[in-house]
Image (tube, rainbow, N blue to C red):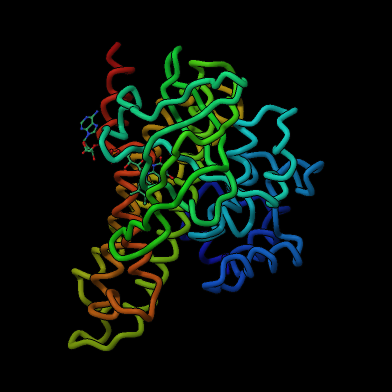
Length: 355
Ligand SMILES: Cc1cc2nc3c(=O)[nH]c(=O)nc-3n(C[C@H](O)[C@H](O)[C@H](O)COP(=O)(O)OP(=O)(O)OC[C@H]3O[C@@H](n4cnc5c(N)ncnc54)[C@H](O)[C@@H]3O)c2cc1C
């Protein structure tokens, strides 16, 4: 629950008053390991697809407003509350035959870009190939990995080399080969395409431009999600420090614990405006490359730092099964690699500034 005190803790930008009740409902939505059931419950409560346009059954909240909800939707929120479909709408043309079903959550997609034998941070090394068959059908062959949610996806976006550069295709004919545990947790998959029929999206050679739209919005939404997870970890840390007895009285009375609390809040407060700046620029259709790069690196570092501090203050309990801290800690560590490793953003923002 986002109490008034918690709003005060996080600082500006504060949630617009007309969204406060909605934000509380999303924030308080019960957690369950059965994500499909949780998604149905969200639908039943009218909390599904809030950010999607009205014609797809959503509330059509603009990104600037949705940001305040996205922050509290939780680790699996994009799937449970349907905001993941925003990324599809950024890529699929208005007249695409699956756009409506994807937007309504009847079809789910995954994004197959990274390959085992090529650096994911540089798509120009992509080896997956696609060609147009004699009957006009596009066919894809290649191996991708760390494809999030491939097991429950109906369709995969796949970046492939075609005669004219890198192109983006959509295919339903992919095999999930094995699950790749990330620091012990599932959800990532290695997938193969074996002469798989596919549909070309946009024009040949336009793959990076098309997927770029999805990736830019995805990074901003992910940063908002990381902010929410950090706030959750911070609250757990603060509550633990106040409740746990110690030689000093409570853990909260140790100055070194106070320092972790201070540094964590500072990291959250420094990061939050950067993320909202990036969201505002992107929503305004402006070139947000620098702001997104700054926000991504800041948010990944911030989540790593806050999750680490929260685990430390909990002692062994922070590593055990009774709190969400191991999952948040894991997200913090992966944050510095996925959506482009931090080094990539540091280098490209700096190059842009120095040009
Ligand atoms: C949890 C998780 C979910 C993911 N989900 C997906 C998904 O759904 N779809 C998908 O396609 N991929 C996904 N990925 C893969 C992710 O996008 C890649 O791991 C990422 O782009 C880096 O590519 P790579 O792993 O091949 O690392 P490499 O490109 O091999 O880079 C390795 C390291 O080299 C260094 N490096 C790279 N570039 C530079 C540079 N310019 N300057 C300095 N150092 C540099 C960095 O330290 C980097 O970590 C996911 C990964 C994780 C961990």
